[in-house]
Each structure stands twice: as C-alpha cells, then as structure tokens.
Length: 180
Image (cartoon, rainbow, N blue to C red; front, side, top):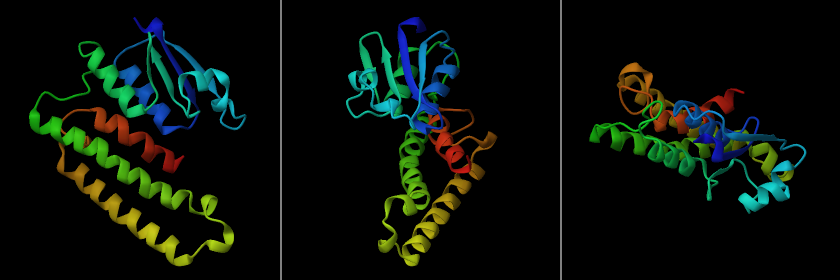
C-alpha cells in the first residue's frame, strides 16, 4: 500500500515533519523516501521540480497524485487511510470544528514565529528597527499566551479535544522548530 508513495523531504522542515508524522500515525510503512539537502539546494533539483514546480519540500506522491502542501498531504492521508493506524480526525462535531480551527489558526502562529525568527535574515541591516523587533516579539508573546490557554482548556494536553489529531500534527512541528 505505502510502496506506491514517495516522499522527498528535508531535515528540519516543519512541513516535512507534518507529513512524516501523519505517515507514522497512519502506520504507512515502507514508502519511498529521500532526504534532500537544503544547503546543497537539492530541493531545486529536476527531481523535485518535476513534482513541485515551486522547488519546495515536502514533495509527496501517492500513485499518480501529487500533494506538495503539507496540510493537504496530511488531510489526504487521513481521508484515504481512515481505518488504518491512529484516527487523526475526531468524530465529535465540536472536536472536528475545533481541530480545523486550530489547524488553520496555527498558520497565524507560524507567521508570528517567522516574523521574529527571520527578521534579521530578511530585512537589510540598514532598514532594521528596534521598534519592529519589539512589536514582532510582543505579537508572538500574545499569540503564545492564546495557545497556552487553549492547551489548559483541553484534557490530555491536545489542541482540539481529548485525543491527538491533525491539529497537533500541523502545529507541533512549527513549535519544535522554534526550539530547534
């Protein structure tokens, strides 16, 4: 079943981790995988560009279906292999709604973390301002307090209910990346 799957991935990439976690949770073993180096620009190779013309990882293929966005790949895998491995989408409508909310709300958290982490890399030295650094950090701090509150309101320490779900799969790798 997993033998007709291929995952091209890069070390340290939260989007790659999302797909890998989902494959593991769904107990999809034996898929083809290839670790590529960002430093060597292997994510811009012909092999990757054929699967993902943006030259980004992960690049995931199942049979003739290509999914390059990690959220899409995770949702696809859960949908295609519902009865295999761990269930990542809750049955309870309230928990399902919360799962989707937290998954996509995680994109705001990702952006605020990126604003802090990458500011010095993306903004030329002469254009940097201490006020922007302060504003980005304050925004991230407020966002993290929201997420801490979410975790305190759920039992078991999961983002969207009583069990591990795609919300955890999608948000956790970005938080890990910050501490990495």
